[in-house]
Length: 326
Image 1 (tube, rainbow, N blue to C red):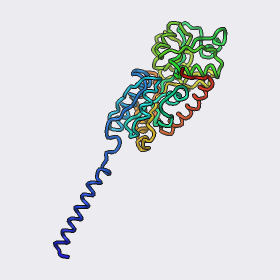
Image 2 (cartoon, rainbow, N blue to C red):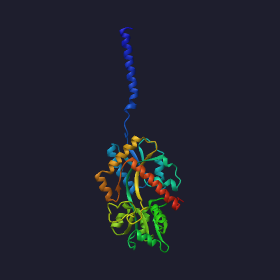
Image 3 (cartoon, helix red, strand yellow):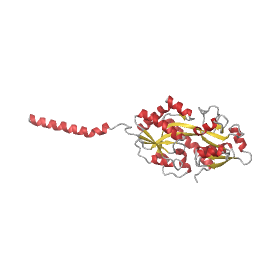
Image 4 (cartoon, helix red, strand yellow):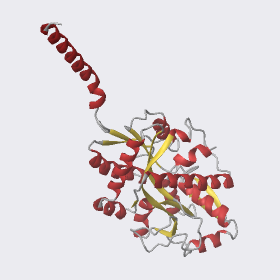
């Protein structure tokens, strides 16, 4: 073989290798996640505890991840509308659900177009403890007094924000676990329930701390217990139901993040770590706690455990009460 022919073959081989490398380059040079804005779908209207927690998590996590996180409110059908949207989204790490108790309980009480397994837990954001409130002029000193008095006569009217809402579960726990005599009065929203208590149309309701704290501090409502396991940082004088002897009354308006099933574990781990970092930011902690919201964060494993326990616990309440969406 002549020198010129060997040179030609060598050049051809090198060109082929170069071409192959160029063709393969995109596979190796693909931008790591995230390479574009991320969407947090909130299945509730703006301004509530879930929405505020979503925005705090989005702001903090976006700084960690280096991409904007857009909060997209999709309220409707008891949070089913927004949940269904995310359950059917591409599992590529760019669409997440800011979940609440409905992600656990909705399939138990109403028809939904997705399976529970279509969504996977990613991270806990935080929670707004629920507070049982009565009119300011009510004679009840605490939850023990309220439950005892409810058993006399015709019982009390207890307002909720609709079937399967957190107040509905509070009422269910009080009646099935402690034999409180409560007549359920469903309203369309928590604000309507609060208005009913303010107007003395019902004896009580339960609502998120962020909603009721202004009424408590102004003396317009009276609280008989908070229903989470710890006292509210912004209102520490209020005892928990557990402290008052009601060990089964453990419920809050929580917010977490779920992703479409099939989203890569590496992405889920990275998002969970970003949310945990956001919820441990001192400025975020101070701001949220001042509103009556408790930031939590944590690992994927801790949130999966929480969701599994909530599913079992709330499932028992659904069965005991016959809770169904009419």
